[in-house]
Image 1 (cartoon, rainbow, N blue to C red):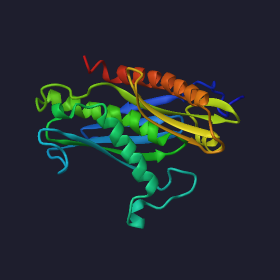
Image 2 (cartoon, rainbow, N blue to C red; image 1 turned 60 degrees about the vertical axis):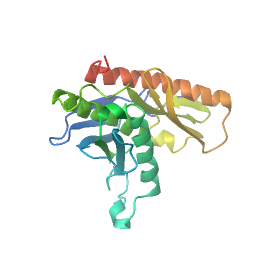
Image 3 (tube, rainbow, N blue to C red; image 1 turned 120 degrees about the vertical axis):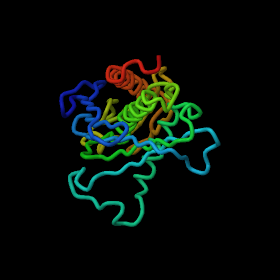
Length: 241
């Protein structure tokens, strides 16, 4: 079937990544996946939460959508006096994904917080946050190494995230909102540069899906993640070597 924007079924949206987008964060990235735009900022603190073992660092994330990130204004979470369930679930996903890319013993007793603020949402905001958040985190770590704070990079491997789905019984990569809103099946996949899966979130929203359909969607995500990680390496260089 023909997609709304003319892409092939296995093609990513146009990707634009701008590093050092803000002045004060230790690492910052504006990532644009089609019309989805997310600002990711990494901040470093010389302390860790109480539950973190002695000698280890911590990586966490916060996620929010600005009021006019979508077609209609949404209320800020602070107006509701609590974080929305969706935002809480997404920021836990981002935090888990980024921690999987770091040797926390090499990070030392410090915390890196990645703030992911959606400036404009058109599908795939959580996976864009992981992809952009990783770059922001790596930039912050590289700055710590260059300053002599860390002896070596604590980043173990590159990671990225992408979505795929089944729309009108057709598997598609990197759904925009108009496709995602009609998807029978939606799947988000976070992977590392070794093609290893860190996390999968798959939902049969319009119908159940088969194991072979799941495998097809994972293969699509693997293709997309390889392309995203290749782009990350262009930006960051081979920081793990």
